[in-house]
Image 1 (tube, rainbow, N blue to C red):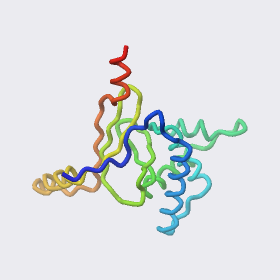
Image 2 (image 1 turned 90 degrees about the horizontal axis):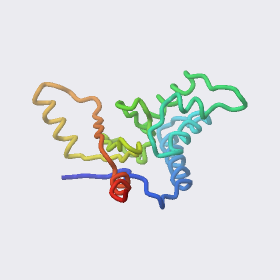
Image 3 (image 1 turned 90 degrees about the vertical axis):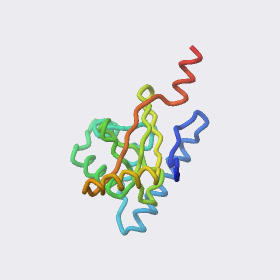
Length: 166
């Protein structure tokens, strides 16, 4: 089985500032390589998505983008999110109607997400054998898969350990 953890659950010793800087640098490189522009607005939205390593909703982004008492317009945020999603820089978690940064936008991949229902943490995996099995089963049924995203809800190790300590 080919299993690749693209992003594990974030631990307490995580260097978050370096992580955000690296994500923004990767995004800039990906956009440059594809001839696309990471505008200041798109970059700001991407940085806000990466800020917590938790899924973030569009309206939460709107609130965070507010400056000097002036709210950003919803279409602005939705356009930025759509660009970031199409560029592979963020993923949309359908079950949460929220977005999370993609740590490997340089490689196109199917994604499987482990979502902790207690703390909201998300781990991203890319299991090629699972994707192949889904494709094979779909083909057998005469179905063509355009996009595959699997979201699995449960409890992360940190939450289980915290519960066990109580």
